[in-house]
Image (cartoon, rainbow, N blue to C red; front, top):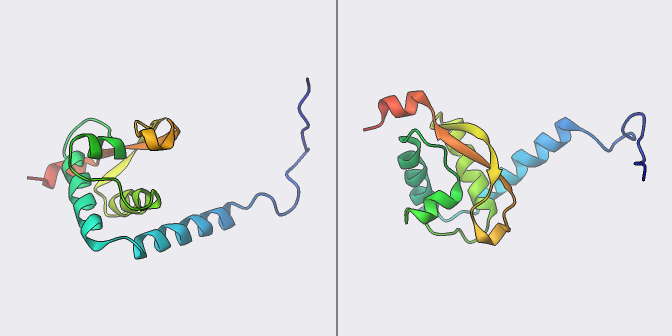
Length: 121
């Protein structure tokens, strides 16, 4: 079986700028609609996990009893994105999610930045 290949993507189907804009819009909407209590608890959980050397993902925050599932899975992306922008965490590759609710899909894992680990008490 052969795969149909285009010499270049059809016009308008690939736009890194549009993809990034859509991503930022989605993150902003998710953050704006997140319960302040859950957002604070999640930020605290991420900061705690970031003090450790080991990589982690959202499932680890739940497994350790630091946070419950949010009302919508998009809340995770907004929370981790905010922590990354704040210099608390950095990407540490991609792994299968441990969360049963997403059926082992690929997710980003994170680790605390050296700067965060150095200032954390």
